[in-house]
Length: 400
Ligand SMILES: *Cc1c(COP(=O)(O)O)cnc(C)c1O
Image (cartoon, rainbow, N blue to C red; front, top):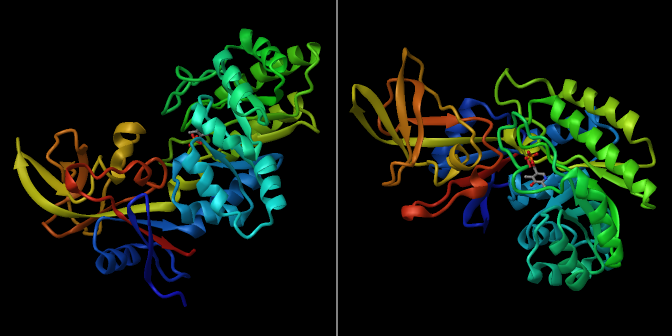
């Protein structure tokens, strides 16, 4: 029904909305790659909606704040908005990306949405950002004294959430060395905020991204419960607990089932944080990773040290940026059948860092053949560059 049309460019990606009602099978990937040219990233909005529904189903007490940094594509943010999500933003641009979605609401409804459903979850905010944010009276996180002084001065209408440092053991992306107040200083930081005439509404943490170790959540919940108890003795009435992101995407079968992790979290929050304490979470990767597939073309082929080497028109400065930034190894698949061999796969730029993998299993392929990589919706196209004159992949949205 919807015509295929190039609608807008967002963060310099060309964006295409493809007709709906198709499943993302190999045939469709080939067809889309032929009609739009490569490299492309196909985003299936049906999968986005399913992932959101899964999260709601297995963690029914938890309000879902989509972490926009995992994939800030405006159409993805729109789909989560339509599904009823709230949002975690961490820059002014991300805030405005969400704010755009509220255009049809009255001024009062917009303000209510931002109060109730948006958290600015970057513990460090530039003064200019605080000045711009203050009019929206948002919820913001903090983890140090200096930030309280800045917030009190430049965004005194904010509500505060104290970000706690928690173990990130075994998570694919570690965050605890950069952010988080130590448990021993947490309540003092709340007192300092109160002294500065700011209101502390709750506590947040992040167990590290792609956290497959349920014990990280258990330990973090226990630490947070200790802080809640200590805060209560000091006269704080904390209303919310933000359990952050980290929920793992099912990249392969070594990742434990979400249902099991959710069951552990549910029983701990039920015991430690009885209602009416509000529980929120900031899933990024879990909601978007499995919704996108990259399709690239082989533009060159060589044999080096006896090993086949393929050169693609997409690489680590582009859709495969997660190989570097996200510590995520993406695997490539071929549309062709046949006996496979170990090969190297490189991106198109002149930099040797632009190496997607030194050990992929692919059949014998030719220049012009297509390859694809699944589960590439999180921390991928979001950090594409224009390095060396190669543009980011075209984003093709299906089932919107
Ligand atoms: C990155 C980030 C998230 C999202 O994390 P995922 O592991 O993708 O779920 C959530 N909250 C904060 C504060 C973040 O920095």
